[in-house]
Image 1 (cartoon, rainbow, N blue to C red):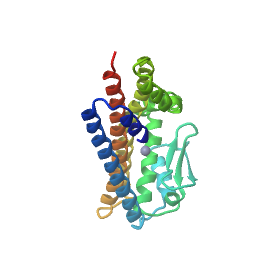
Image 2 (cartoon, helix red, strand yellow; image 1 turned 135 degrees about the horizontal axis):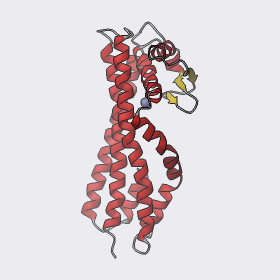
Image 3 (spheres, rainbow, N blue to C red; image 1 turned 135 degrees about the vertical axis):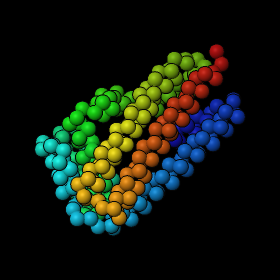
Image 4 (cartoon, rainbow, N blue to C red; image 1 turned 45 degrees about the vertical axis):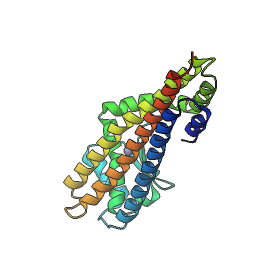
Length: 241
Ligand SMILES: [Zn+2]
């Protein structure tokens, strides 16, 4: 986000366009902050609502119920570090989730198992997302430098900015392909939590609310990436030839 403000300050021309972008970026930053804060407070609250099983046991049961026996459930350090690793087929749960028998832990554990099931079933958006990983990790190493140099040299060598835009577009695409992957994993989690009787009529709504909040963080990240991409496209289009 910081880099865009540097560019905004650099381009004195088209100040009404810049004003629009400042409003858009500030709006996204505020919204993103609110969503993150709400997610954190929900998780803290729902971590105190007890459930019959730990995150670890929920994960193992969900995998087995779906006929998956070759995925390991392990504990990983940190907070909100939970993830499924398709490379070594592991569901990695943060310590707080792994050992906790709460609605929040069950929701997170089941969500990560949702990714393991997507992997086992060769769910198309997950395959596309995985295929993009090497391109995005290459791009993320250099994209900000290419864009910065591209903006500085936009009048003399506009092709550089265009190259930066193409690189950045891969990360925007990645953040949008992430949306169906995440929403589908949460959907699988909620359906199973209810049908397996892990959640009940009184606490299911908390699992659903926690996962919905987590989805909003991915949606705002994708919108933020799109706004940044469009911003660079505008600089490119508004150059003097
Ligand atoms: Zn996920």
